[in-house]
Amino acid sequence: MHIVVYCDRGERAALASNNLPKTGYPNVRSLKGAWKTGFMPAVAKHEPGLPGPVLRFQAVLKKFFELQLLGVAGV
Image 1 (cartoon, one colour):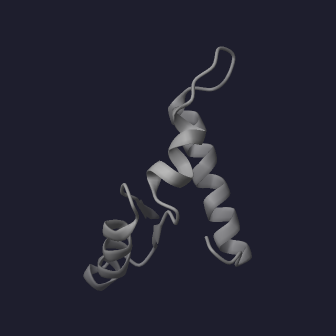
Image 2: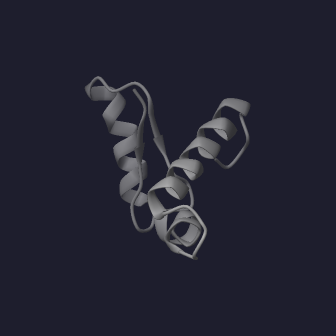
């Protein structure tokens, strides 16, 4: 199981991603860039004919984990 944490600015998510593995959750990632700056614009915008916000968020998470596996810096 993977856990992805995020917050408004990224500080609380970074703290959570550092502490959760210490409590038995080894697969924790933090969305860098924070929710508002990096991911909300891609997820919140809704236009007719496009997938809903949940599907777009799932696509963002999939891309995030693909970049993590490739070792892309800054992700």
